[in-house]
Length: 111
Image 1 (cartoon, rainbow, N blue to C red):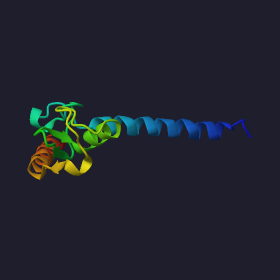
Image 2: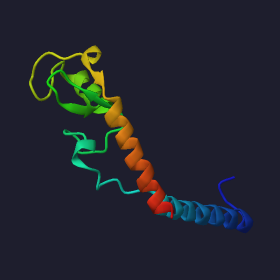
Image 3: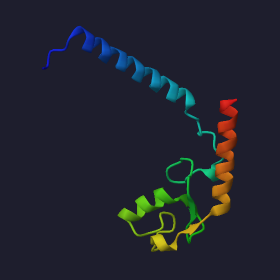
Image 4: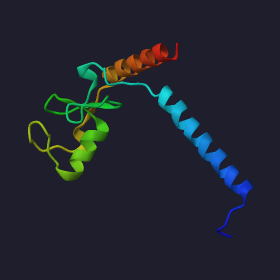
């Protein structure tokens, strides 16, 4: 039955309206992290790091970014030296500072 009744059409319109309202609510809730301090940003993607790792070259990158890079090239993107995933060192202090900054930012937006 491809032809819909007026009641079915009205239900569909209501559903579309609810979906649009949810999108607007989600956009209002989204937090803008574009003003993150430089040290919290991935040097290749310029995005806020979630899981920073230290490369042997001394550079810090987000784990997801460097893992994606390693799928294409087994080298450090800065020094071009050989690099593998097991050579990445977690940066827990920086990760904690990023999380604290994000929590403070979320608190400011919700108040």
